[in-house]
Amino acid sequence: MASNAERFTETPTPYFDPYFQRAAVKLLPGQYYVTSGETMIVTTLGSCVAACVRDKVSGIGGMNHFMLPAVLRPDQQTAKTFTKYGVFAMQKLLETLTRMGAKPANLEAKVFGGGHVMEGFASCDVGAQNARFIEQFMATNQIPIVSRDLYQDYARKVYFLPQTGEVQMRRIRRMNNTTIIEREKAHRISLSRRVVG
Image 1: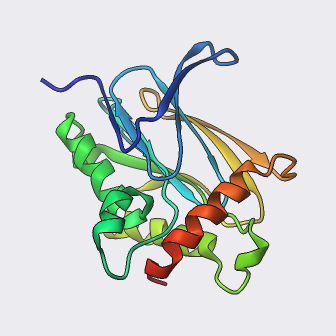
Image 2 (image 1 turned 180 degrees about the vertical axis):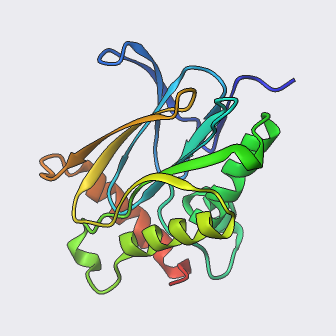
């Protein structure tokens, strides 16, 4: 019997959110979380993308956080970080939703991120690549996107309540805290050699 929540790849950080007064988990790049309970899923995005996917009937839902669309040549290194790539992150998210009882015909998505926030990548807009990937993936898999906030030039903080489908998103226009950008730069250096444009 499946538990009401499943965590993967470096377990997301659980915490109690004092503003929303509820249990929550925070996702970092390469992580995803699926639940049939009331846990809120939270992440912060720069050029990365998060897909919030749920069964609109049962309320089973989850979110992922990926950094690049796909890999050119999978190897031992990418096998350790595969959910940082959109193609794998989406496959695992959908597989887990189905395993926990979600019905493919009932799925809907809300997608966020893909911001152009890293000046050093002006010649290769990874955020736009991520945004185009998620739009194409959902169209190919016939999962309707009922809400989106993609592209643009700002970071985002996303709060997702799978049980109700509610999402709150905060735009981060001033990057006073450089954590997001520095984290993404470090990951990009190690992953960019394997990106498919």
